[in-house]
Image: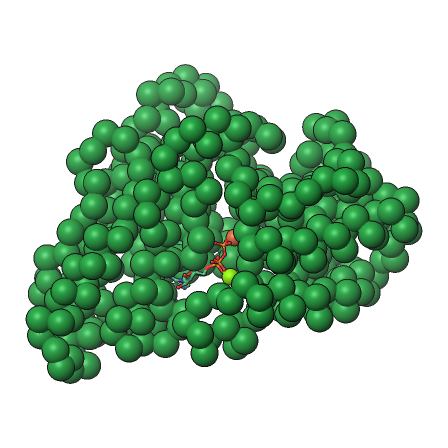
Length: 360
Ligand code: ATP
Ligand code: MG
Ligand code: FE
């Protein structure tokens, strides 16, 4: 089976070809990503209108490039998989409509893929994980702890009730006059800072539910910055280090509880096979070495395996969309009808709309 994947939900235009052979071995035949970072950085965030136009301009050529690098033609592809939500509606329309047009013209089935499902299943491609496992998605738009039970079977255990974690990094950077995207800038500054100088809040720490909240942290950063302005480089470094420490402690508490819950719900699954349960991390924030270190230590302590796919596959890409399509096909799932519509909000688990903070 060979699938062409298309991803346009945010600020990356991406196309990829992935195949799985008869023995079940998977291969990424091509992986093309065009980031729009330069087009948005002047605005300090993703501008939906600019993003949609950039997808229109780039997508057709990117798809050709992906097919060329994979050394296949559309005839050699068995299905098209396109992200159809959640995300910015303009970009989703571009990618899904293009996917539909190709599917129609080439007479191939179309799979409309949930972007979060792509992130959730990537670790099966990269690390061959078996179900169930826990996934922490931390990006500019999402902060979710998800139980992955199987293909199409997801339970959202926690989500942010306000800002996404990447968003908190970006806003903190902006407050401090650091460049966009904020995550890498904050991490770099933090290296030279004193993490104990400011005692920033650790939202929801100690609470039984597994949700996240980061807007109070950002407010505390603003307050601290105002109190000691004008800021020296050392002040900025100290704020960044203290911010990162607060985030780190928060994740340790929240995810620690998630691991406990996993152990309670699946007590017998893993000792039987000798395989350790796994925590997978995905999203751009997964690039942060301090947070990775925290999660790794937490997993070690709790007898979990910590899985971080290569960064290129943690951030937005089309390989994960093609892969999710393959996984769906492999379960015998029917393709989507060509009148399927994109959805800017589309929680992974069907009952999630009744929970608070949905869509994030
Ligand atoms: P989506 O949320 O739809 O998946 P996105 O484009 O917002 O898409 P990503 O591209 O996965 O998300 O990640 C971008 C985010 O990751 C930004 O908020 C950025 O600041 C953050 N980030 C990147 N590198 C780091 C880092 N080293 N430390 C912390 N955050 C980081
Ligand atoms: Mg992005
Ligand atoms: Fe994403």
